[in-house]
Image 1 (cartoon, rainbow, N blue to C red):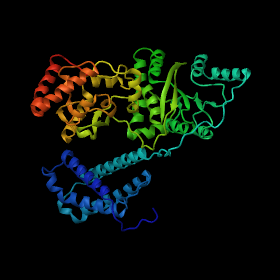
Image 2: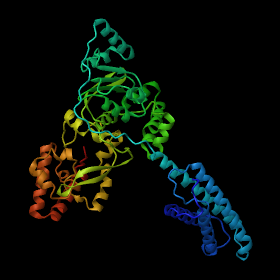
Image 3: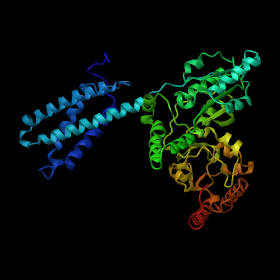
Image 4: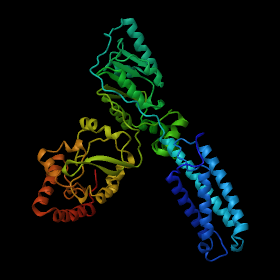
Length: 509
């Protein structure tokens, strides 16, 4: 800041922003402000040009166009105030001295000045809020490591010490929780570490590879840096080490609220809580502000999000158990997670799909799943397998609104952008993830990659129920494309699909 000079290279985006705001301000005022003249744009054209040039020149002199990455919002607003007041004084002098014959209205000047000042203030606040939201601490890069075993041989305590250990756990949780833990870990072993903390510092102090099982009884709802916690524990555990955590899932919170409050009021309370604790943390502009206000306490977490975070951070799910209104998860360290960027979860998503010639491309959709659900696909497939229509039998990743959108294909509307970009066509085989693509037989995989995927899959024409029937339906379509031509086949299938949807009322699973 101290090294700024009067002459400098202005940042062009700031100038374009001011130009845009000036045009909008003049248009709004001259279009809707009650004026005596019938030709306001012709009368005030010179005035608008002088005002705009004065604003830009004074902004340059006031160093508003210096590109400073972390300029504080208070200083930016002070510069704006200083510049705008000088512009107001200069324009008033211009009206009184240089353009006395034009009879410009002082009220028009004040209105345009106020409009420009307010618009610039809103832009400054918005842009600084956006930068603030994105200015987060990067995740620590983790280097690959070789095989690591626990450093110390386990010591099983005597009967008295074991009983004390069990009693301590029961006091913190319950006998049901203890019974669950005993199925998977040696609770009374010197290689098992139990804690009840939300401070990452207490976890960082643990010696690397000292324990083959780490248990934290502090609910994840009370921990701000969940991913950081999982990453630190991943580093501390030896290969195949176990980690046990607990949390109150969203479904239990909803049940508790609906039982605590009378009808109607419970719905209002839950709706407000949902907006505050589920929507606000997911929006880019409000996410960091939310965590600064709440310090990450009393968070609302879905089951899918917690399991997805664990898989994302290098664990695989071993078991789950509901106990004491909490859901306990046993996870095994599977691999070392790599450095990743901060993840945002807005209403739109971009997913990797296998396209023509086997090339990967991003498909656009409306979000219908909980955060981190994309990392659970293999776990869900192993646990629940597929149902009729090739979908999972019990997909915990899909939200309530998401189920409605999927039923009526609303989530797929953004894929029209993929059609316009040329990655997809209107009718064609469904774009699949690598996980789904690997489930298909080799012959169908080879035929699939010869064609672009489509927005309207051919199996909507006959609505098969099993994966084998879906494969047969797609094979029939692809063979028809090869024998009769793609354009002719797509034309026939388009009307078959419309007939199935409109007259047979077919719906997506």
